[in-house]
Length: 395
Image (tube, rainbow, N blue to C red; front, top):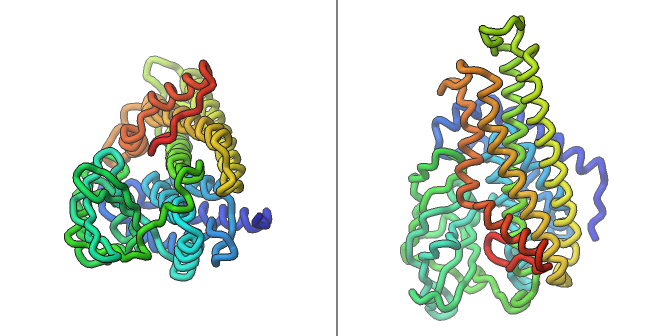
C-alpha cells in the first residue's frame, strides 16, 4: 500500500490550479481555433503531474485515483479538452496493469515514468476497424480508426485490433506514436472538445512488436480486466462536473460586472433580481451535489483499485454503480448549468466573442458518445433486481 501524505496531494492540486489559471487565459480563443494545444500539453509534461498515479516502486508518485480525478476536474473548470486529455492519459497508462502480465506492468510503468510519456489512444470500441496479421512474433496492422483521444502530440498510443474481418480475437497493443505507417489526421470536426486531438488515425503496415502486444493470460476472466470502463466513466464525470463549475464561475463574473437588470424592473443591478439570485442558487446547489457524488465515486475507485487482482465481481459491480451514477448525474447537471447560464447573464452574453457556449458544447459533444440513459437503465435494473451492470466498454 502506497504511503500518501497530505502535503504531497495539496502540492499537486496547487500545481493543477495554477495550470488551470494559465489555461483559462486563452481557453475561449483556443476553442475557436481548435487543433492541438501544444503549449498546454507541454506545460502538463513539465508540471510533474503525468506520473503521479504510477506506483513509487516504478518511478511514479503513488497517488490515488481520487487525486487524479480532482486534478481532471480542476483542469476542466478552465478547459474541458485538457481535463479530458489528462484524465485519459492516466487511464491509458494503467492498461498494461489492468490487462497485461506482471512484466508488462513493470515495463510500461517504469518507462512511462522515466521518459515522462504522454499517452493517447486510437481505439474505437463501437466500430473496430483495424486488422492485424501475424508475421512471426509480430503483427502488421492496417486500417482506419475514425476516432482517437489525444493521439496527436502523444508519445504512446494504445490501439486495439482484430486478427480477421470476422472479429475473432481482439488484441491490445502499446506502440510509439511515431511508428512508421501511422498517420494522425487533422480532421476532428466536433462542435466541442475541439482540442482533444480526437481525429481519425490511419494505419498502413504498422508493425506491433511482440513485447508491445498486451498478454491477457494473467488478467483474463478477472474483474480487474474490465476496470478500464470504470476509469473512463469517472474521468468523464469529472470533466462534466468541472465544466459546470467553470461555467458558473465565468457566468457569475459576467453577471456581477456586465449584466443589466431587465428594463421592466426597478433593480439597479442584475444581481439584485431575485429571479437571477434564485437561479444561481439552484446552479450552485446542483453542482455541490454533483461534486459530492463524483468524489464519493472517486473514493470507491480508490478502494477497488487497491484490491488489484483480488478485486471481486461484487466490488467491481458496486464501483460501476457509483461511477455510473456520478457520470449520469454529472452529465445532467452540467448540461443544465452550461445552457442555463445565458438566462441569467442576458442577451449580450450570447456572442461568439464571449464564447461562453464552449462549456455547453464540450459537455454536449462528449455526452453523446457516452449516453446516460443506459447508465440510468443499468442502475434501475440493479435497484429492482440486484443485478450489477454487465461489464462493457461503457459500464
